[in-house]
Structures are given as structure tokens and as C-alpha cells.
Length: 158
Image (tube, rainbow, N blue to C red; front, top):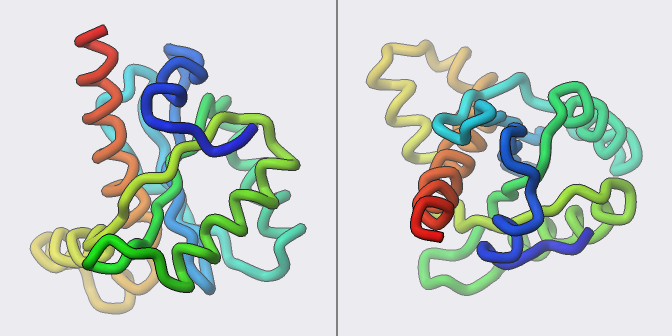
């Protein structure tokens, strides 16, 4: 399925199933999952990037195992809102991945999500080495939580 607008995504996802948040980095794919009521996002282990086919298979296996209804993908916009090479790379990944997985997907502005995740980890006194291992999944959780909050608000007003 193609990447959808917020409203179309809300209409396309099955209620009562978790959503996944993705932070598509160059070395890893950060992964987070929501609970079934879309109340909170939890970081999961990262997927180490190798080749697209292997990355996509690992991602699909993780999503299938959790019965994920839809994907929220971080879109790394520049601070002025424009799209640079990283945003184009994220769009290309999802364009290719959509051919392999019919789940609905939504791009979500991820500006400063990594900064917020790192600040939260520093405040929790997480060591530098552990932060490096977990930062992409923590960023994915921030991305997903932002989308969950908006989706729940939209669902409540409908």
C-alpha cells in the first residue's frame, strides 16, 4: 500500500492492533511498537542495515510477529521543513518496501526526535555505550508516540 495522509491512514488501519514506528537510519532501523489501544510506544531492538532485501525481510518478520496494523515512518525533514537526501532516502525505502508489505503507512515529521530521545536517556543516566545501541529505537518511539497522540485525538473527535 502507498504512504497515506493522516486521515486516510486512520481509516485504513484496523483498530485494536498495534502500530509500528520506524526511524530509518543509514546503519540501523529503529523500531518501536504501540500497545493495542495506541496509548504508548515502546522501543524494540534495532534492525542492523545490510542490504535492502535482508532489511525488508527482517522488518516484515518483526512486524508480522507482532500483528502490526500500520507503519509510522520518521521523515527527517530539515529544520526549515524542506526535504534533503535523508528524507529522499526514507521515501525510497518505503516506496520499495510497500511493494513487499500491504500495511498502510504514514510519514511523520521526525525533526529533533533523536535529540529528544538522547536527552531522555541522559536524564535517565543511561551510559554513552548503551545510548549508542538504543538511540534509533528510542527515536522511533518518540516518532510513534507523536503520531499516536494525534491519531487518538482524531479518532476521539470523529
